[in-house]
Length: 243
Image 1 (cartoon, one colour):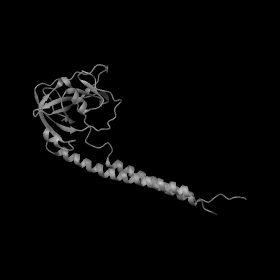
Image 2 (cartoon, helix red, strand yellow):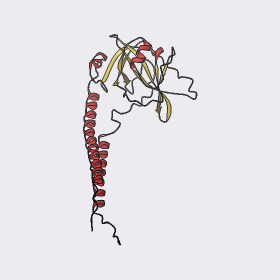
Image 3 (cartoon, helix red, strand yellow):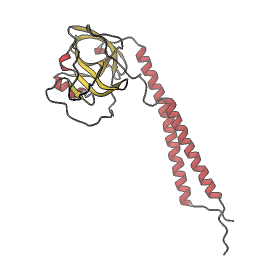
């Protein structure tokens, strides 16, 4: 009995195995990188709050505790669309703050419900006078998913936006905004107002290191399965021929 051998089959099998092994190794590397990133963010979160100027000078201020004193411009707030809280649609309310040192930053004050009629924007709770804001710097991801990419509305406040574009919003305000927002601490009131709901996501990665490791094992399993399938096909006997 002759055994089947196909050079093309061998080449395809080796290609599949090499691809699966490469993807498995990449996922193992991603797991290590994600673990290091989480440790860095956790260390930042435990550190003492820094000034806005100090956060601006850092290469990566994401998740750095920040304390800033200044005045909020409640009349020119931004509503970040498509944010839900306890299953209810709404917005994140971001209000520009002018710090005592002259820097500007968007302060994410929390969540506001959208209401029954989408055409009517919610009222922005005003805050007057100087305030001290304790919060955490947050840099939105560049690849944030939006329903559509639309220009900022003309001469209408509050602005309703699909994503936070600091340069575009700063241009509309006529100021240079910090390239991050400050998410206010959960229990901190602003002025004489009760704190808005602040359902900030935990400072964790979208995919955990354990999930990356699971993906790595899956790709490794696929490589092994491809090898087994090839060996089974290679050593399978040809059917008998009566001729």
